[in-house]
Length: 222
Image (cartoon, rainbow, N blue to C red; front, top):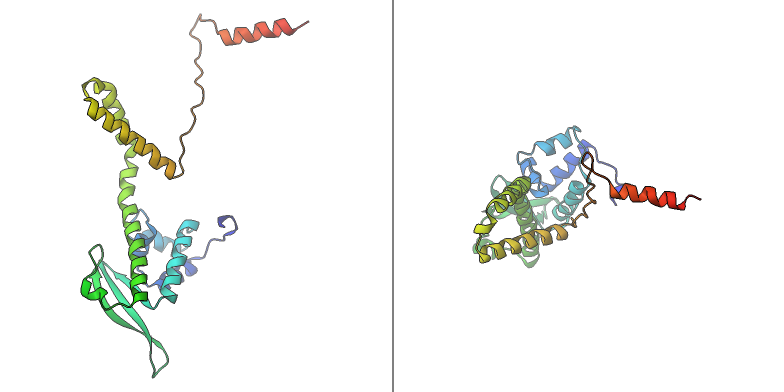
């Protein structure tokens, strides 16, 4: 659990990145970091910032995948290379043989898929699932960053011209608002209860709540 977790050193982070074979940019994409340049990875390696538990937890399955799987997957810019690990009968050492490559974000060519074994297909499918999830996260973050301002503008527009909406348009807005609420709940953000609003009495206005409290205390005093 995170509560018992000690932050790794920069050299340990560097070793994890090295063993996965990812560049700083590729590791940034894999972890879904906001800065696509890889600068945050380099800061972790230089001990200029502590790596969050969530990032470390995500990198460990990737490391396990790279070490134990029969096929290695390497990202070089926009190109993804599939490498088969084979042990040399002459030297007894593992060597990497290029199976093929494809462009990240594109469909994997059928000819390349036909060269893969069942285990290699499984490895590739797992990698693609992580890649697509991290890509979707990266695309969603800019939208979320401006979501509050956009919603504020929508609220202002509705306040100004709600009477011009057609019933169908109003129904669509209600459905979309319910979708936003449901998505927030799924993300672990339940609706907060509003604190009761306390209205200060205007000058010369009697505060009935305070007066009732005084009357009650006087009534109870023998």
